Length: 169
Image (cartoon, rainbow, N blue to C red; front, side):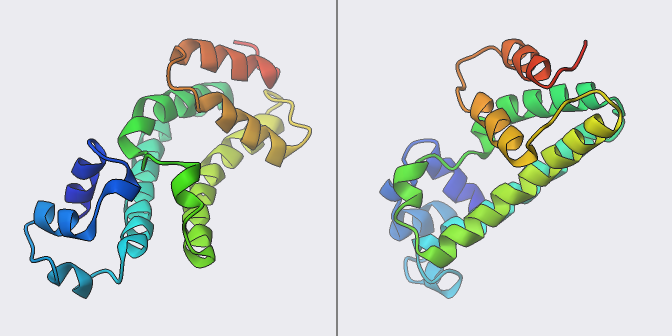
């Protein structure tokens, strides 16, 4: 089901994908999809959970053998920029604004899971004297804002963020 949904998202925005299209792409009957998901919002929340799990697994594997906080942050940035399109749902703000409050909270929990990896890297970097972080929440938001424009070279974003945190490379 999630592979079919992901494939549909390469061609359509989330709000343009219907449950009937998803059922057809997954090779199940149009009504059978409702045995698994109450509606498209339930699909989006479940898909976000699935994708977040995959993303974090790949990220943690990439970070497993790296101890230096600056190198870990650089790897986090590269991974996010390189893998971000693969794991990105697509419609952003306009779609998420249509989610119920419960679904929005569930989606936010997945974002928090990714932020926890970054929080750990920053915390280790501060403890090692590699980074200067005055406001952790603001720093996490600012780093992720730097990761949003997908057209910038990864190396430029990496240098900018590391310099902003006071890291010497």
